[in-house]
Figure 1 (cartoon, rainbow, N blue to C red):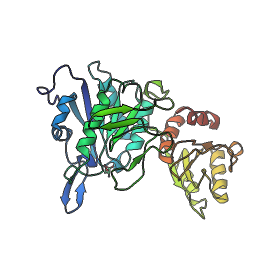
Figure 2: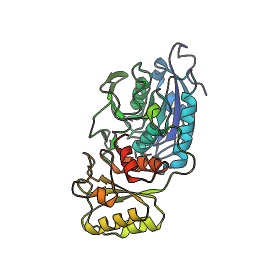
Figure 3: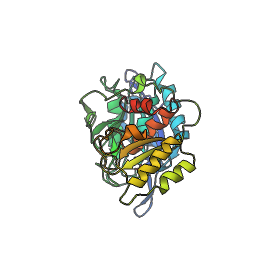
Figure 4: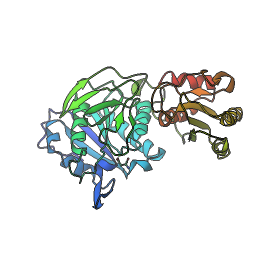
Length: 337
Ligand code: DAS
């Protein structure tokens, strides 16, 4: 549906906005309680009339969920609809409104499967639309400003929040409630955007979007991959249970440099022998999990997640398992994406 056609000169870039729900579309239900995914895509755009000075915006409601309910089915629908919009020559880029809880996972998935060099910017909010000083409207304005910027193309999927522009590969949600919840702890920001004024920093890290070998999400359901959080006194119970439940991959959110207790290590080695891919990531939230430091990955057949946090490592492992089961080939993916 075409929005703000009259107030947006035909010379302005065309942005397709795809809505999935989240707090950015949330509304209070009484007291401090609120329901995510209440406002429509049209309502979000109508709440920011200044958008008419940036772009001609068309909208599409792909889903209406809080992002804790995000799943592969919505991912695939969102990827397909975003790809369809971007394949239209008249469309400059896409903006996706999304909950903040799993935004980093959706952004990274799209970063790996979209066949495009056009700008794709995800945006959410930490306060519902009915809040005092709601952050959604400015986040949305800044997301569109980043998407229409002449230098936005070729940077992969981006996320705009709190006047910052993050690369999909780098971003992580780090706080339950604060506006400054999003961080890019390893390689830093893609740029800054202040009331529509964009400042770009470095280029996107690693391969992404048009340069990805996973373009056009592989057909069929992604192989099940579970994340297991390591802790002091960790045993083998959850690893064994995940293998019995049919997991084809495991991501260990390990302590420190991706470490896990001896009994859990033994279970991991047995899982590999049973054909399950095991990736060591870290619960620390930053840094690089390297191969063969305290854990003999080469002997165990484990894969080191390197810079990817557990939830991002899971996305890459699911896609990787549609191509190969070989630990060496899977490890190469973690040094490529
Ligand atoms: N539950 C959160 C979500 O939808 C709300 C939000 O922050 O967007 O991810």
